[in-house]
Image 1 (cartoon, rainbow, N blue to C red):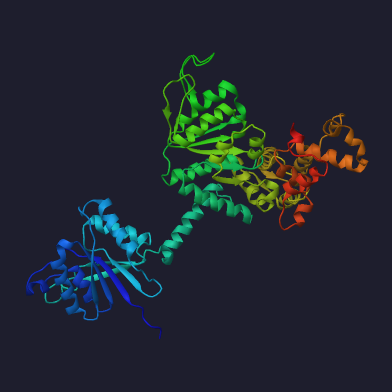
Image 2: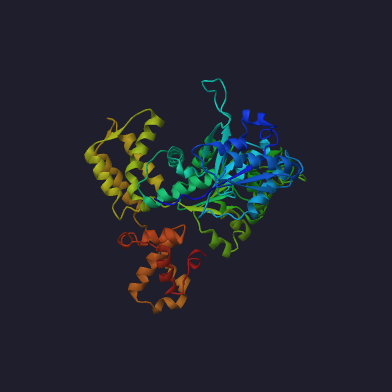
Length: 534
């Protein structure tokens, strides 16, 4: 049989509960003595913590412990604090003991007795054990029940608590259920079959529940940034982590004074047309969540003001001379590469550094083809909720639509917006309440036409970019490069363009780095992403 490791108990001397005189002391329950009277608990050493003023009582308790448990070695340890009810004083003393104690967790087991001492001391011992400053389990003792003779047991009873919550199956199960419920909130209850997206949502749930720091959501238009931002708010609201509202703004819809006024508010007369005071969105989002979609579209002045608001929780409305306080959590969205915007001088590097702490890039629908089917069902359910008219698809129509949706040439340029619009159109035209194959054929043809590349204008963009160097290219290279330029100019990022250009070959790769492939291709012609967007 394996050798039992020594058990070390650590506890505070109880000047009131442990005290007792003469032989009568054995007629009452004393916690530190009772701990050593348990038949099934063999304590090798007892570290008794006390102040010097209680040295005499400590010597008597040590003698009594030796009497009831001769094999236990009692060590008297002095700790110093002036007020046993001062949290900072007591915590510091108990922390100091832990910091200087020669712990040997690989050789010894430890118990921390929290029955004696003031409530402040008990709380401090609990916290220090939970934080593993004391690598121990908690032991709590209590007076015994009365026996048949009507007397209480002087040994009392005990309960041992291991604060490693991972060892408690029911608790671990509850935590897992809570995380799963949080993920369901973030996905609107739509199950995801895409492992990468499931992992991303799990991390978003973890971050949303743990911090009020800014969150940056990236990804192409229609990938669901606005929906996810609102879901993050709903998750935080359900857990009482925020009590303010969800406030949102698409920064691409405002410019100049209008942007500053919308975000920060203004005072009457701040600019032409400011006839009344206005509360800005930052103030309205106090104690809540502010979602700024397309954050890269706001001006540099507004970016500077926003940075101060995020860092210091204060800002100055337009035309005001007194700052306004607002404690909000910022969620920013962007379908553009903000680092490219920083290099181009269109976005402040310090603001990006502040909002880039937690960045999550949402994949487009073409990268989550496994999730098209559950989202198809969700869109049908949403149509029924919105219109009060339930529509279904027959089996053949469903199979035809999913075959089309999962084909490599189905680019889903507008992502979930394309899917939602397609379902809405088909459901609206399904007068019998059932979408059939004819409606699917009509809709898929419409989508193909929508996604089909449009003809470029007669002007050759390569001449504009390469000048006379264009004459040095083979006709084959000119045609291919012109198509790449056309796609890039219509895409929001390198990754977005790469997904379109390499839609077929990327499916055969274990890892797809479309942006890197495209960047290297452009470099062959001394071109960069920025060159294509000047």
